[in-house]
Amino acid sequence: MHERHVYRNELQFYMAIGMCILAGMMMMGGVLHAVKHSFVLGMLFVAINCIMIVVVFGRMALTVVIASGSGVHVANMFSSFDLQWGEIDHFDLGAHGKVMSQVCRVHLNNGRVLSAFAVQENRIGGGSAVRMVDELNRELETRRASGSIADGGTAGKEPPSPSVGESAVSSGEGERIK
Image (cartoon, rainbow, N blue to C red; front, side):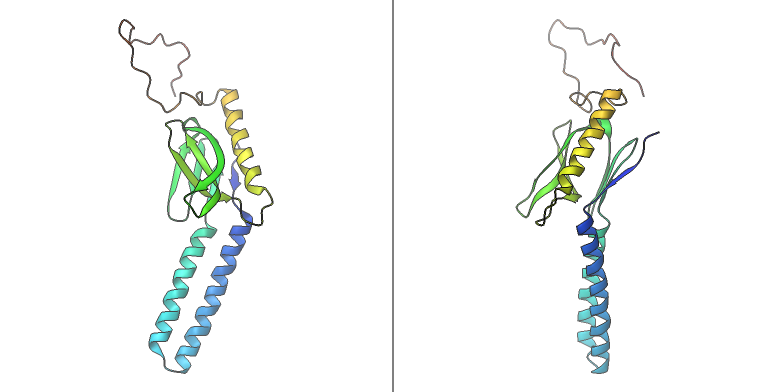
């Protein structure tokens, strides 16, 4: 049985939690101030803004990449997805749009590239994202070497169509049935 590994940017996690706490304190102070001065519209404005801050930063704190025996679960801020190890070609760090320059990217065998925002290098650096991506690639290679997943170059791709004169019947050698 394989272990479960959790990957996330710790600085991002603690900053997001801190922002949630700060927003809660701002909301309490703003609401109390608005109540004291009977400023209902101001109270609503402060409450709505603070709730939005808590939602965004709360979701940021929940971003995670979990590697387990069956595959990888990625929880981004507003979406999540599960991948089996056989679907993944490799992991790397790269650009996501024009804003985020060092985000973990999951390259799939079918050519798609998905982003995992829990693993990203921040401006402070430290190399933690590089280390996490290296660990994910090592785990992927270990699984390939052990034969627990199909070859990274062919898993998840459609088999090539037979050319004229070739048989479409497989000999069954080297195939696995799960």
